[in-house]
Length: 79
Image 1 (cartoon, rainbow, N blue to C red):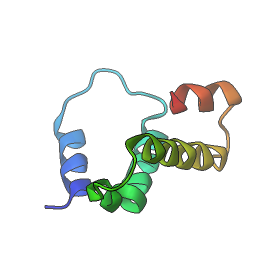
Image 2: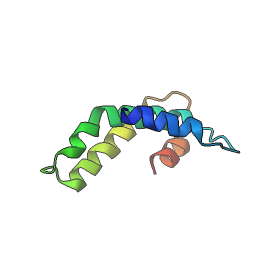
Image 3: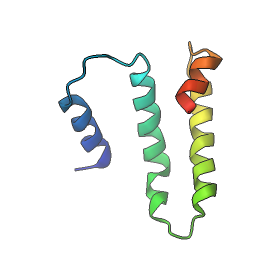
C-alpha cells in the first residue's frame, strides 16, 4: 500500500468531532509535497536543514497559489 493510500485510509477511519476548515488545503499540500519530495527522504547525503528549507519553501509556494486564503491563514497553515 502506498503512503498516500495509508494516509487517506487513516484519515477516513479516524472519527472526528470538529472539522478543521483548512483540512482539505492541508491534505492537498501535504500529498503534493510527499509526492514531489518524499523519495528524497531516503537520500542520506542530504543535509536535514537544507531539506527542511526546501520543504518549507515548497509549502509556502503552494500556499501562495491557494485562492481565498488570507495572509494570516497562510501564516497559520505554514507554521
